Length: 125
Image 1 (cartoon, helix red, strand yellow):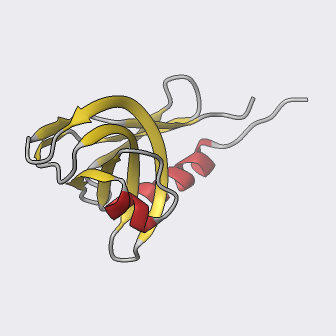
Image 2 (cartoon, rainbow, N blue to C red; image 1 turned 90 degrees about the vertical axis):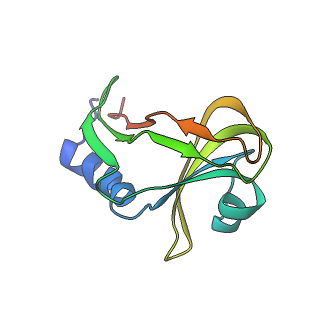
């Protein structure tokens, strides 16, 4: 039996991130709450402009994807191995999305650049 989902449905899902998340946070481990993302495990925080800093497009493998803008000269507040990225809405104290990333050594006070980051919502299999 085949499965299918409209690109509009996937865009609605990704637009929740695009139109609400004003912070992209590099974390030392997977946060499960807003406080863990913004305080407990936070190593570096990039301010995001909702809608503007996110681009929707066809997915690389399938479905749809959202790509973030490059963020330069971010000054980390923590030291450790950054291995997760959290997307948060500061005004609502809400954690919207957490995904893993290739671990990078981050040192407090040493500016970093965060390359464009992609999250893909795949078509059902």
